[in-house]
Length: 261
View 1 (cartoon, rainbow, N blue to C red):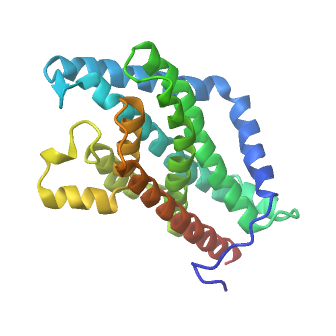
View 2 (cartoon, rainbow, N blue to C red):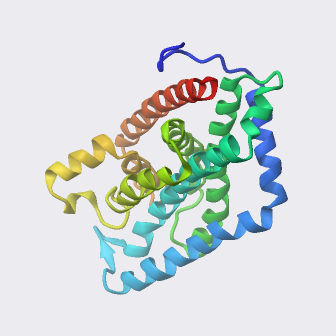
């Protein structure tokens, strides 16, 4: 049995799994298109304009502009995470889609890699839908904000890898509520999303930077959309790249172990 850090034998056939999920997504496009569109509007009106009436500026930045990159980052996180937890678990356990694909020349590694790539693609689609909405409201800076699209793929792949790790060890679909409420929800609140990290105690700031992946994604999104570029962008990117590689590697090996057993 391969170690969890073994290099999986992923081939180009993973693209077949990715394409299969894309076809399903397109067939239900009407259902899939409106949630990110409405989500962007709800955040802008409820938090950006609503709370922004009382908190007009943060560090000289209009509050609605301050939270705009956080809206994109949270969308990247949620779309990839929930696709590769609840979505992947349904395909694996209830629909038996994984079993059907593994019965073909596709390997387990190809199937899981395809799922991870699709989770990242789902994040890109969400940003592609939400970014024009934010641009219309004038809360992101174009054309630099366009770079949030490729960033969404990297961030989405990171959260897809994290999600698949949870999926690989969860005994039932209800158990996936634990990482959703105990990891994803707190991260959406305490990663420098709706208020600066500097307002928190020092130990919580270090915790957010060391443990919470969304912190780094929000920081880069903010640099690209305000814009406020600095050399810290490369440190945040390096952190995300390392965590992405580790989680994707572990998740493929853990899922291989689960599906073989």
